[in-house]
Length: 296
Image 1: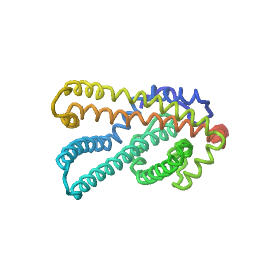
Image 2: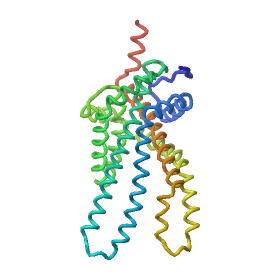
Image 3: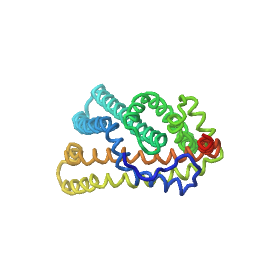
Image 4: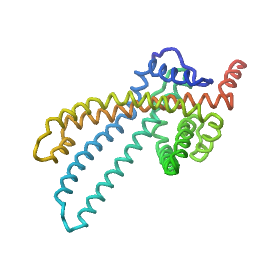
């Protein structure tokens, strides 16, 4: 496979170098990198998009049903509708977790193969590792969500702290092959004394990726404004909800959904650079490997 100059991950970097090398990696490997994500995670992303379309259609129908039940004396009907809504929301949330995990694993194992082969990525190996470890990473993801959630309800600060610490978890699990418990424990060990630097990188990269992802939402937003403008003055205000059934609006939202998930992998690249920077500071792993290779 053709590739540009190999980017060394296993070395110390300051904040500016981490951000620069993150986008340098994308700039030099975007075709193969995003191609791998689409090939491996594409079917999962498509499944999530289909479920999103079905959910939008279902919620539109529920809104109509609830309007029909307005003033009804039968509470069971209302509770039945609300139960089905929460069921759909739970299913959608679960699918989003699965999609994010598959995209994350594809991204991380792509980088691992990139490092191990000096840029000659083995896509078959990336695919095999992705689906072999998917359930372990879903378990890790659920545990992280629970920890950050309970941290967030305690005046937000513990949640922000845990969010930054646990941003290293997926990299540790992939590159060190640790189990879930050891991964969580090693996050705290690795980030000790470097929380603020890590927070700065995670926040800045997250903002940049969020701004890029917002570009995918602009077409849907413009279309929504235009459609809403045409509905002003209509007698039935509930016609506004029919926008959720508009095929153009749904298609634009699906495009936004796919774009955001693909771009989310950029934050994972930054997290790998952060992981190796901290690992080099604490363990000198890359330096020791270079010395060993010189000896050989």
